[in-house]
Each structure stands twice: as structure tokens, then as C-alpha cells.
Image (cartoon, rainbow, N blue to C red; front, top):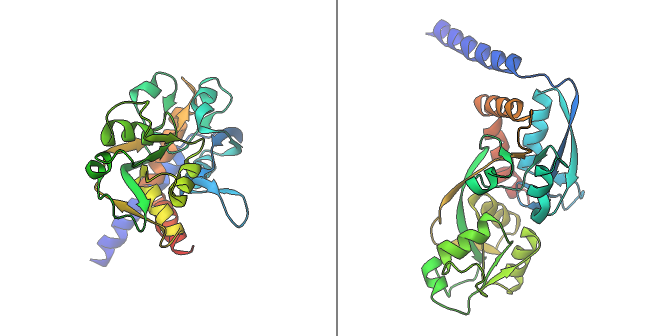
Length: 262
């Protein structure tokens, strides 16, 4: 039995090693990456150091390491990020960006690196509504969002009446600003993916909670300029990161361990 276990382990290690050896070598190429630093726990400024940290930072750095590349990190606001990547100002962009057909018409996506669900984040003492139906029933309740995001469209079509100009949606320049408005009472809910909701709840004990059930699921992908020669290498590195357990470790680090340390 022991020899069979050793043989199986050797085969597994050999498979992982073969996958690593098969990855493209970018020969030290610099990949210009852009994010917003406003989407806990995917990308944000560390409150202690001010440095950009999060799952997406670690993931792209790991991809570059496996491809023998370097990363030049840049910042951009969400509202111009897709356009900037489309125009070739950056090689790769990320901000919890949902893969959909409308965006595919402008840029290319990597394979998904995360699947999440949209939830209603509210203040911890919220008792006036319990889900999207009871929220929608009271015209005084407001939702905070960034224009053009999945959170915005979920609020429009899965919570409210399908009117993108509905005055009950208060727009903010950054995702973090909408959460701050929720905490201060300027809006009553902010929609976000499950992983980010867990991040805000963990980083702010006693401040937030989730009400109701999931309002749909979404796949996140990195965005790249149409026809980019980085798509295949990045997808290959992503596959190896998922196969050898690194992705699981990164999710544990940012969705559980980091939160618990706050």
C-alpha cells in the first residue's frame, strides 16, 4: 500500500512538474498591469503600508513569475479602464471584471479566475428590509453603485424596476466610496460579489451584514487588448495555478486569513 501511495504521489508531482515546464517563457518581458485599488479583497491599498495588495495582485504576480515576466503595476479609475486596455495603454486590467458579451466586443478576456455571486450588503443593524423584494417595495430605500459595473446592472434589473436612470440608485466614482456611503447612512445597500462582501464584513467587525439570497452568479476574468499575445500564456499559467492548489491557497489567504487578522 505504501509503495502504491509513493508511486501515485510521484505521478502527481511529475504531472505538476510537466505542467510547469510546459509554460511559455516570456524571457523577462514586462507586463503593464492596471487596477483601481478599491475592491476589497481583490485589489486595495494596504491600510498600514499604502501599497496595493489583494488577490488579483498576488495572482498576476504569480502568473508573471511562472511565465518569467515582470509586472509594472499602474492605477486607473474603473470608468476608463476597459477603454484604456482596449487602446493598448495597459497589457492587462483587473477590477473584479465580469465576463460578458458586451465587454467581449471591446476587449479579450482570460479564462475565469473566480466565480462569485451578487449579494446585498447592508449595515449590521438593518431591520427595515430582508431581501431585494422588501427593499424594492419601499421607495425611500437607496442603493449605491458605480455606473457601468455588474453591481449597477444587478441593482437596476434584479432589485429595482429596470430603469437605469432610477433616482434610487446613487452613483459613486469608486466602489469604496459607495461602501463608505452605506456605512454613513447615505445609502441603504450596496450590491457586491460574495467574496468582496466577506472581505468588508471581515475587515469591519460589527459594521456590515448580508441580507437575502444570491442575485445571480458571475465569472471574473482579466481583460486584455484584442488579439493580445499574452492571452494564451496567461491562460496556461492560470491553469497551472489552479491545478497545483495555489489558487486555493490565495483564496484562503484573502477571503479568510486576511479578514481574521483585521
